[in-house]
Amino acid sequence: MTPLPAFVCRGCGEVVFPARVLCPRCGESRWREEAFAGGVVEQATEHGGVPIVSVRSDLKPVVIARGRAAIGTRVRLEAEGGAPIVADR
Amino acid sequence: MTHDALISGAAESPYARHPPAGTTTEIVLADAFLRVLANAGIERAEVDGLGVASFTLKPDHAIDLAWRLGLRLRWLMEDTNGGASGLNLLQHAVAAVERGDAATIVLLAGDHFGDGDFERLVNEYNRATRDHLAPIPFGGPNAQFALLTQRHMETHGLSRADYGRISVAQRRWASLNPGAVYRGLLTIEDYLSAPIVAAPLGRYDCVPVVSGADAVVVSSAARHRPVRVKAFRAVSNHDGQRADGLGLGLAELAPGLWDEAGFGPQALDLAAVYDDYPVMVLVQLSELGLVPGGDMRRFLERLDEERWPLNTSGGQLSAGQAGAGGGLHGLVEAVAQLRGEAGERQVEGASRALVSGYGMVLYRYGAGANAVVLEAGA
View 1: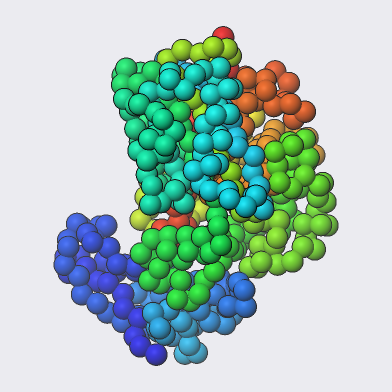
View 2 (view 1 turned 90 degrees about the vertical axis):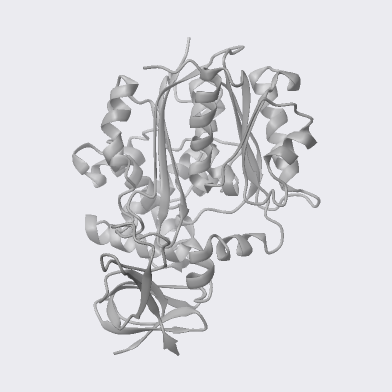
């Protein structure tokens, strides 16, 4: 597992995921990466045997990730083979 | 105001779950082209404008299609915006006819999905999808709209059975449409007991993917029974994918839309709303002012028990989703109704219609929406 990067605007601090070219808030084009720590599961489903959740991250962006977790629980956000995944906190 | 350009023809190349061997995207688009010429009563040589929307025409583009259909054109467009592409094309075509850039424009939208085409499309829909969703593997938009439907259920206190009324009501219309791929009547029990695809979405919340194409003619003159465009509004990337997907930006545009149309939603005889999932039908109708007082349960009762004419073809949920054709499907149905050509499902005396489009999931939900108000002309 590897860290899952969020993108932080160097102009105003806005955090986005997936990446943008220009900051939607201030128009800045320079970004730095910051690893997502975790967040709270807001919705959960399963498709074709793959559990999928929507996570409101601590950094703000909502991330769609693979993993089985109950709605309302706190999870860690990481990446595996490019896929955002959730792991127990 | 009323635009001078007229919609003077509408047709659909029959949708097929299992098209005959040898079917190609070009063949279904060409079939819709020939059918719309016949419907409008015009010759190929009169066509001087072409607009095309298709996911699977590649590596060809609109100009290749013009070449292969033998069209010499003054106006050419291609739109890649899926469920929003049909009405986007209409917006441009109306302006082009009014400016005199072209006199007779055919708009075509459709797709044929061969082996693996659909999977490729959903996994490479855009870079965000390819990079962050395909590796999950998320399996396509059913998962995204399952998550979105959960948000909508929670926000509005609705249950699965509420959304099911849309599928059931549309299937009732589909039973009267020989062009719909699913025509057998559906009960709410059938809906609720169907296999779950991605909770809370079951089989009847998801569109059947088909091969097929849709077409309309936009022109400065019409042979018979033209349809007039009363008002149009569109919005793209309303919120930068930073909200919940339950607002498309149509609510902000609705007052201007109805003001320009010269009548309100209560004066409509029918509506054709982009129905990739039942939840999106409710979102569009709410934003456009068709749900009085925001009372969705009451609106759903009206739809189901009083048979209010919504998606009278059966919609994509029953007629099928022919890729980008879905963006033109509702317009074709509304034009057929306003021209009195809807056969057994004809809404008596239909003269005013709303059509809306919705498309292009960037990451979590669609980012394009548009709406047009139509009126049967003299």
